[in-house]
Image (cartoon, rainbow, N blue to C red; front, top):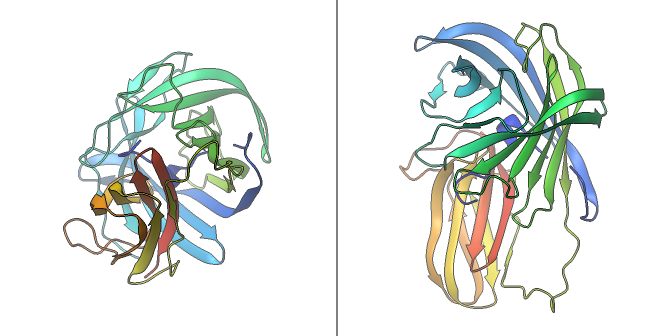
Length: 309
């Protein structure tokens, strides 16, 4: 799941086995305006993300294409400059849904092609209410088998939009879940786009139960970024219990690879790497939530950090 670590921008996740959960991230979305960009008619969605006293806002431009919604561009709050994604992935289906229906997301330069499949239609209960006939959309890499563990699942309801989501670790346990806490919408369809429609979600991170060292040898540990939030740079530290190939990559909230900090053989012991907030081309990255992922043999771990401006 190297190239697509989907997360944040359009939400996800649920609780299960794992141990204690930590809530605190609130995401609010609102339909701001209808407009046309680069000849593409669409809708501007304003999003505000709040966590641990940090607040960030940005706009997303979503177009309809081939009966589906597609993320087309984003811009930081207060800016008139749009960053376009001509090959960005599909976000939400809007056609008539049936179990087993599958479509393929658009491939991107820095992320893998993704498949979206309607798994089940069921009743979902979240703080905002009880929603019958919710469509569960399972997301997999195109290289995965159709019946394999998805890396993310989201539940949608006609006339209300997305009401619940789960993002999974590679072993199938829950990484974090997102649930609809309140909403105000008019219109109909998979994702109502009437002006003024709003959705508020709460994200809960699930911390896995400790694993006995005798059951699974600890090959590496990944420390929290420091400082975090940060500007202009942050330090990423990790420990290796044995030498071997190591990869440390930075991804944006959509799972797009921003830059690779380490991709080489490293000796065992303590290592530190600085990320200066720039991408592979040397350009400064916009403020927002970023993921950093360490891979070493069978070990992999992903954590989050926030770049502020």
